Amino acid sequence: MIDRTHYLNNLLRFRDKSPIKVITGVRRCGKSTLLDLFEQHLLRDGVPKENIIRVNFEEMKFDKIKTYTELNDYLVSVKPKSGMAYYIIDEIQRVEKWEKAINSIRLDENSDIYLTGSNAAMLSSELATVIAGRYVEIKMYPLSFSEYKIAYAETGKSDTDMFSGYLDDGGFPGLVEYASDQTAKSIYLDGILNTILMKDVVSRGEVRDPSLMEKLLAYLANNSSSPFSSQKIANYLTSAGRKTSAVTIDSYVALLEKAFVIYRVGRYDIKGKGLLKTLGKVYFVDTGLKNLLSARSGFDYGNDLEGLVYFELARRARKVRVGKLGRLEVDFIAESEAGKSYYQVCASVMDSNVRDRELAPLRAIPDDYPKYLITTDRLPNSDFYGIRHVNILDFLSENS
Image (tube, rainbow, N blue to C red; front, side):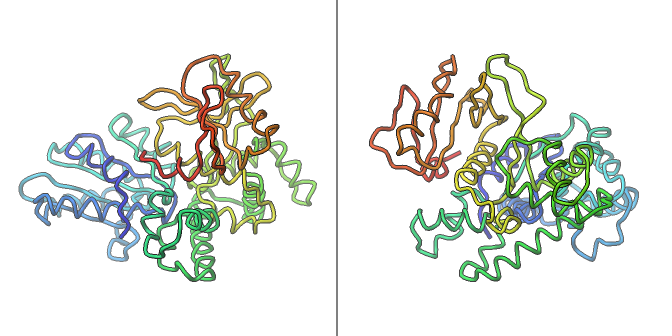
């Protein structure tokens, strides 16, 4: 079992407190394992086994619970006679109107509730109406590079070789089992992708044209980290023989976002201090899935690095956006409790012309918040006009 300390600490921060803890993320990113780790922590802390009510709706023994009334009846029937009851429930979105049962259980002051879900619709619609303001969302992703290094430590590989594997295969925890079997890795990733598409996208979203969805997904894989335009995508697919519209593309992209396959990041006008409506960017949740879809035909090392930096910042910061300053683009603006910071990502800046081009947006920002240039280079000079250069392996290995 891979220790996900960052997420476990987030859960413990809210233990025995009233908000419902909702862990969201793409399928197989480790949500159930996180709940296993949390349960083990409770047991070590002296919580009686009978006070931990564990329900996983991927298990057949819970298949008969279909409605909120059946869920409520079950949870009431297993409630402990005394002490805090810890309700730990996996994939709760499978139960119709589940939020009504959870809201009822929540009213008991001796209830501490932890939920997972693989579709953001559980937050955008169901939770929003019944338990709005009474939950905290803990966003979970596949393994970070720091977690990946720990998981694959027994291979004895160098950080550089580890990073190459991380870029190629991605960070789904289940891949650790197949560390030396590339064929098995591909089959495993293909299984994850098919499950997500069928259960969380096509079926839940009632997609009428699964073939179009697959073509859209392949297009996004080959153009991740690029400015997003639904009209441009619709025009491209139409010219390739799949007639569609910007409205359809927008609706399909929204379904992929809700399944946590992709993340759409908005653009922020640094000078005007406002969020722009167009030309944000799309990032794939995992490079392994992205590579599976693109077959590396559109492989762009710099774009992959940009995606890794985005998700690392998403783990660390409260808010991450793409920056715009006049005609210049800043890859990321990150905001956290520590304040604001700016990031530019490039494969290499050994060429002085490339370096000047990448530094220009950061130099143009008229404030004194920290600014970083992240590359694969090892440079003798780590400071350019007050902008700190950081090697990407060092950046990804920093403590969050």
